[in-house]
Image (cartoon, rainbow, N blue to C red; front, side, top):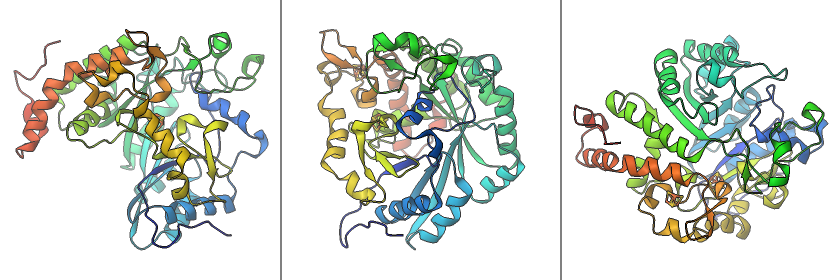
Length: 414
Ligand code: SF4
Ligand code: SF4
């Protein structure tokens, strides 16, 4: 095995990679999951990373990564990779393993493995059964909530560190407190992420996209999801409803859960107040979160796994060289340089930074293209939370805890 390595003395910049050793293969058929369509990019029968490919990828990843903590993030292939990664790491590197899973195949063996090796598990769940099952279905079209719940129970039983990844979409957007309280009170979850579903598509493909993204599903012709078009499917979250969803959860969190429950949207905004950007979507620039496909192809971002954004292959060049390539630098910089005037003068730009370029399909009040589809929601959430977040930041600066914000006068006027 020959692995391209970073030249001696060259600088290693920090980055993250999401690897997909099993390509677009999945045992479920979630209606809004456009990644299912990515199997069209490759020969369907060979979408699995070989042992040699896995080793090449890991050796490249670890050689390209700076010393210190290396996050190894996976969607598939975990047991094999863990042993390999431990063998390949440099003495100055500590590995943190993370996986995202739909949870439906987790059993006690998995629970024990994930706990023993301190994996952080991101579990996808969209709320209680009647909301989760709207789009998160199996290949027979049946809801998967009960199986995911069993997966959650396995993780809890084994004490695995877990994040809930909840997508926000048309079916659950009007039920923020039901969703939040379900996670907090029924599951006992403490770490929550709310991810907006925006399925963009050219208008002439909308009808097809409404049927889902699995190639050939329902006897239809195939459609590869690409970041093109300015129409959105009916499953996508409504921007204003998204804002209200986050505001309602924020107020509930503020009234009793500060320091106990961690909501990513709040933590990210608080970090931004301190100039510490922890999420690419709300950073001034992006470009250091790459994606690797099962055959070693590297893409600019997990959301841009499409031919124009392929920046190399792990067998041909160090990932660090791809990260520092002109194409990737431009990809990251363009998040800032294409920011429309409305965002540049926006009072909550510090928190929002225009959101992810993939969602910038709207026009500003002045008719300038490039405004984020979710703008109304972001604006609502950040203007509502800014006064409280500034007070929390003030507490933290004086050595107090965020939980000190809670009290009878904590609520921000709606
Ligand atoms: S394109 Fe969006 S998701 Fe990808 S790195 Fe940039 S901000 Fe993040
Ligand atoms: S809230 Fe809207 S205008 Fe303000 S930075 Fe975000 S997307 Fe731009």
